[in-house]
Image 1 (tube, helix red, strand yellow):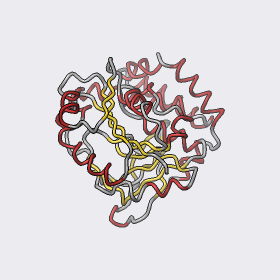
Image 2 (cartoon, rainbow, N blue to C red):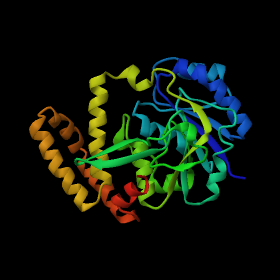
Image 3 (tube, rainbow, N blue to C red):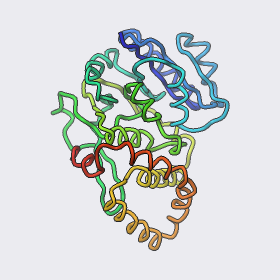
Length: 298
């Protein structure tokens, strides 16, 4: 029987853990989850103490230095050898049977990830005016009864096949401290021929509380990281010659018209050697073009 582990990345989320872990324990027991791991990203609050004293069923793995979401998730996933990994944010409460409708999809060996229903629908994207934009499909959730292909599964509420996760190298720490890392993972999987799904019958309550990002970073910091990571994503993953050319023209225009964007450009540009090395890997491993991937989810 396939083994399932549940990993919760945490940073200064003491009260979120106290509020949501009880529901995680109930669902994990009902669904046969083998182990629950909280990967703590060097929290300075009471997170570790609360877990140790109030939730002994949970295994806590601690990082000595705060790094960011992607690297913390990777650390947590590396601590288990389960066949499938459930990722849940520390502010997520799953329904008791949330895995029941998910796991049968993995009978298809091409299925890499399956996102839970947190109140939205599946994810799609478009390349427009030289930049990559992602969004949810414009459909009524009430009309959706069956699983649907999605561009990526959220790193805050989804299940991933470990063998493909390892093949892809997990989340890319280039995106630390946050944003775009799960989009990047799902997009790389799609270009290699794997499938990401969204399952409407797997219910998870999420984003009820103020998130850790909004609690610890200013709006300006969040905006700058988001814009930097948009560039990292494009430079790493968009390998179409026509789309790359369109992006270059749009980027030059952006820098000329909006001088403040230079700081965003430089913050991404300093990572170019790492980005380009990973870009070459994606070029060599991709089975589908950017145009084909985007068209498949139009």
